[in-house]
Length: 108
Length: 181
Image 1 (cartoon, rainbow over the protein chains, first blue to last red):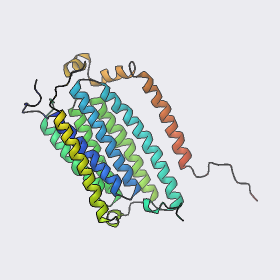
Image 2: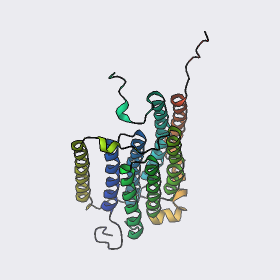
Image 3: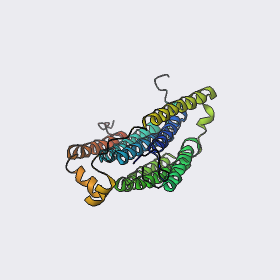
Image 4: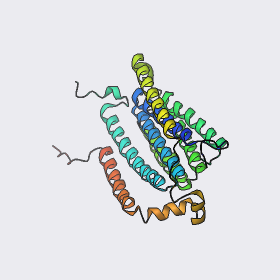
């Protein structure tokens, strides 16, 4: 089956392009925003984009290793967001803000 | 790929619109609820691609557990007032960041488009093979407990370390108690 000439299906590079768009929206958010809650949300966006890329390649190559990798990435993301939000609470307790521009204890 | 284009494009458009809202909305609660929509759209795409277990995990873990954590932290910190941090950063910096990300995106699309013409060597788990073996969840679970048993067990250690670390970081006074004078 030639995947480049099918009319009623989505081509693989379209799915990968969609993943890349979501990934770079997340990267833009991490670089542009200053609210640390939103920065963590954008990190989750980037992880999700990589997950979808794995699943698309798993479907394309008929190999289950990609979906297994997605399972482990979901576990790591859950642990990461738990620890990250714990760090956020510790930061809020010290600085009374969620703004990353206010983290300048070394400067003062 | 033999997935329905209608479902894919609907979910993809929803995901892109909502992820732009995650980045550019000022209210953290609005960001969080846009993120829930992004996760749900991703679960739809997973189900469309035949990854049913991953779709269920996406709803349970991401749209359930992780989003509850985010909402809980937003409510706990009283951080739900709008933050205008986007207006504060330098416009040259914003243009540079957006241009840099667009450049990387274009590079990725170009590379993907160039390399997509080569026919891949298919593996063992085609759609028909998964159907005859009893469905996506069964095949994935059997792999998880046979070929990938060591990483699967290691995730339990990771989760335990994550729990202990989160409690140790977020707890107020974990050090030795101060003596009363």
